Amino acid sequence: MNDDMILRAEEKKINWYPGHMARAKRLLTDQLSRVDVVVELCDARIPRASRNPDLDALVKGKKRLLILGKADLAEESATRAWLAYYRQQGIDAMSFDSVRGRPKDVVARIERAASEAVAKMAARGVKKTVRAMIVGVPNVGKSTFTNRINGAAIAKTGDRPGVTRSNQWVRITPYLELLDTPGLLWPKIDDQQDARALAFVGTINDQIMDQQMLAIRLLEMLMELKPDAAMTRFKLKTAEERGVALLESACRGRGWLMPGGVADTDRGAAVILDEFRAGKLGRLTLQRAPEIKKPEKQPENKPENMPEQKGE
Image: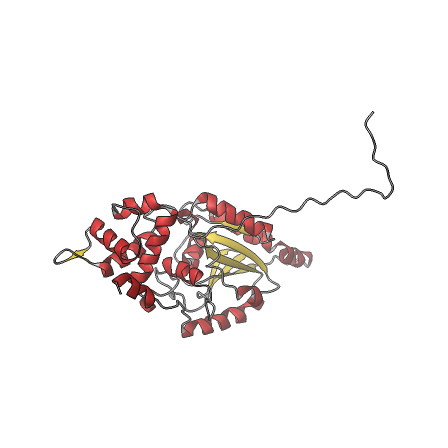
């Protein structure tokens, strides 16, 4: 059995639900009664995988705004397709560019979502302070997003999942407060394609996975989606290789070698993942939006026994 077959045979299912996430779920539930709007932040590169399916039940009855964050790392056309898909589902959705995004656009959308609650308080002569809760999976950029909207580094950030372990209230305007919450996954990730997508972007802790296998899977996906970008970045000579051979070729192309010219696949795997996450291969979307179904045209109802009119 060759190295590639051995590695794939030993590939384990990806699942990560550390103890602090159960506490994070309790914190989120405890704060729900205090908020007017739930802002769900997902990753524009993997919109499907980065949405927690448990949120629907947890935040039921609350006004919601879905934001496709890190849109500067995703393909613009793919993001537009996802937004159109979500809007067809009746979901209030927008994208946000981490670099050029305008905080006032987000503030306006939150205020619009909370307009009914604001109007009720105004009818009583009270100027309401809108409170919005930011939720999402680990390492999706909630704290960075909150700081961007605030215009200052208030919420603690990091490039690994699990940095935020407690709720952090941040006042954005005199009448708007945001609550940054810990990242929350669901206990069992059944879809392993989604699990790998989460691992690719750094949602799941690298330390619990085989980084070489993860890097191979990412390289294989890149060779399907953006072969030119992958070949250029990793100086690959052929587009035909897959598995361990593909990782080794990337190592040789970039000079990640050990004594004797042996490919340093440990180093290569780590760098490949880091460079993808940092957007060094260009804008990439790993998951495509489902095709939007057009409503079926209803046949015209004609009165019974009514003869068709003939032209003159």
